[in-house]
Length: 266
Length: 266
DNA sequence: CGTAGTGTTGAATTGAATCAAGTGTCGTGG
DNA sequence: CCACGACACTTGATTCAATTCAACACTACG
Picture 1 (cartoon, helix red, strand yellow):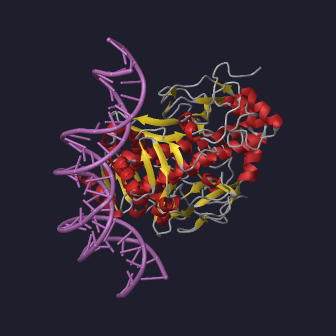
Picture 2: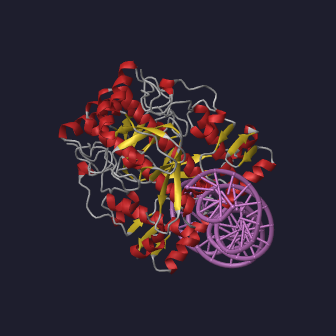
């Protein structure tokens, strides 16, 4: 009945990480399949539905719009667009960035499956940055007005959305510390460890993954130049902490990486 | 009846800025007076009560605890303390900071009257940083569980608290950009302009104010050393953009300051 | 198969940090 | 009320981590 009409065949949480994922995709949980419901979505333990019961998840399902997948480079929205929705990444990955007058862009965040995009627009009713797919990706759109209305009916959902926003705030403050006091090597190590645990969160390998972003994106995010990022990658390889082949990345010594930033850890 | 028993005499939104404020303080709106209600608080147009009607403000008043003032250096809470409440600054100012293993602290934020503290603890149920009064200050404590319950009853309050959190997220992302791409001079100019508009928000002079924090605090916040902050202050004075005498600060050419970061502006 | 984008590496430069030596300011106790 | 000590701030000389400039290799894709 429900099936693979639109996007048949196997798929993984992250298209670029097909080679590294563990499980197989069964039709109704295929992350590229727009018919997947929150109830059956493999991310429902990490995404908005967390802590909701069956009937609540069903209500959430009603307001979620499962748009067609985005191609690499497609924009989810652009800076100053009117804020209408937040988005949950179902598969693939995104970068958020701002463009300054001088043409230079700065990446403000990367978003992986199960993560929520667009909360920077809630206050001003306009998105503060542009957000672009880094690879073939699919998202769930959650119209914010409806999310608010539903949150008002479901205390669990309100509680959880406060938590998601609080988490974003805490995470942003960690990055503040990183940018204001870490060296290039510490930033890069911390970035890789962060990616690692975010992949682990969605049951992908924490030690082998494909970077969906360019070195330049990483540099813009970490406040470094492309050249520095490249050099640090080389240096970390020489220390046998990682192995990088283009985008393919292996963390060979996670403890060693952690040790690099050890004294800075809270 | 209600009066100045606990804290008589004149007071201003920011104790350290008494010399610069415009209006006088009448008893029931004195920010150091613990008996001030949200309804009569001079900050109620900027703080949590915004967008609430009279009856709603009254309900909010019921859950707000107006603690005794904090002395300079007193902690509101410490890193890893159990999260229980968010706090609204009524008067004075605070800094939030994290301490790393190596003993170095990094300031993650400054909080002025009308601003909300503690949202970093919502997700993990533990505060992610320590928060300390920079001067004699008073706060309104808002137990979060009760705020959630009340938000559930008052859609306006829910909406507004989502907005407050969204604003914090947007602000943190701006700082991300600042830290990852601004020079020392641009960071410092941006910092002063930010303070200026935050003072303006609470009807204090945007061009003359006392800095509640040390040069070292500023440096830790902006990712610079004390020495660099000091040098930049001197340089900005030489350019006639500001005049600084210890903590007393005057912005002499706000356009000129803005021009320094012009090409980086969104 | 060529071209644009992505990534690496080297050499020179530089902005901010570090190291160092002061002066200024404030709060406290004698 | 003044003297003392601790902290806050400033300025200068030197160093260094990361940027900039430059050249080239790799890859991916129409």
